[in-house]
Image 1 (cartoon, rainbow, N blue to C red):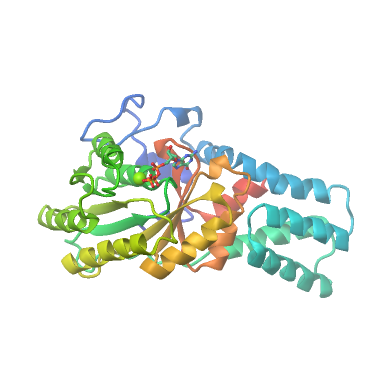
Image 2 (cartoon, rainbow, N blue to C red):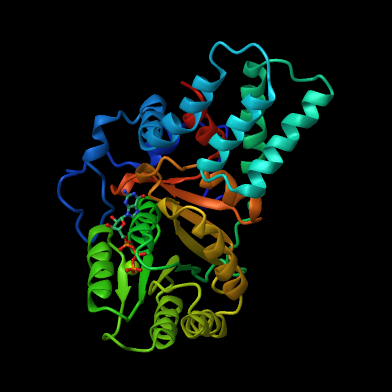
Length: 354
Ligand SMILES: Nc1nc2c(ncn2[C@@H]2O[C@H](COP(=O)(O)OP(=O)(O)OP(=O)(O)O)[C@@H](O)[C@H]2O)c(=O)[nH]1
Ligand SMILES: [Mg+2]
């Protein structure tokens, strides 16, 4: 059962978006408590397959011009793959935040093909890079669901400060609501009053119940109460928002582990999914964050936000190849429709095809 990814990778984007985007709703105003939000900003793109893809391309403009744009200029007019061309390619890959290890992996694959004389000119090299990058992105992604269909699917969301956790939760809640699911948002970020307020506004916009306590309350206690309520009310999906914390703050990482344990005590097997939100603009630090959160919580997915704000979208490739953790969603803007299920083929097409 594909919950987070496209239900069928072959299915056209048009069919997918159509099912998810109510056409009749006045998109300027937030939807009432009974319905999800549709977004006006993105109406400049049609909701057909081409329009949906254009929106992704638009969100990845900076990465495309910096990454493939530079590769194209480098290869222009060149007939041979020389050492200096390889050096410049390394520089482009590296400065696109693909990461040292993945850059090396890609260059090794190129050199190996060159020694076998299977790669002759720069145009073929570009095609090979494209294919290789696609294979790095094509990870198996198992989705975890409750063993008892009556139980809620519990998704816990974590990450450092300001990466886009709460906004992503709001957007994901919106997606689930569009599918007709009942959703509960859990304000386990009790650190700032504004955080609870922000989640409450999302709850009202998309029509999701919000469970909260006062500022300074124990996040585990909020999670425990929420789980009790979600089970008794037979809620379909529970999304747990947590406070931003530096991955280097041991006590705060332990607090997160406690929230995780308490949820599991209330519902064995939960949280079924633990997602780390990473801000694509933070570059290589995202790799250290992923390592620390993976160690503390055992991640089942990654959400990469703010790809629209960076030329270094190569981080998607680095994260995918260095961790065996599927990228569930990518964020390409601040609008509700700008959080998209990650589709490797579509991503490669959006950054490679002119
Ligand atoms: N451009 C852009 N902005 C985004 C994206 N995702 C989130 N944001 C913005 O990032 C800012 C921070 O988002 P929040 O959701 O409050 O981040 P958070 O991780 O919950 O923050 P804390 O709870 O303070 O740790 C907001 O202004 C969001 O609109 C994205 O994909 N693109
Ligand atoms: Mg937040």
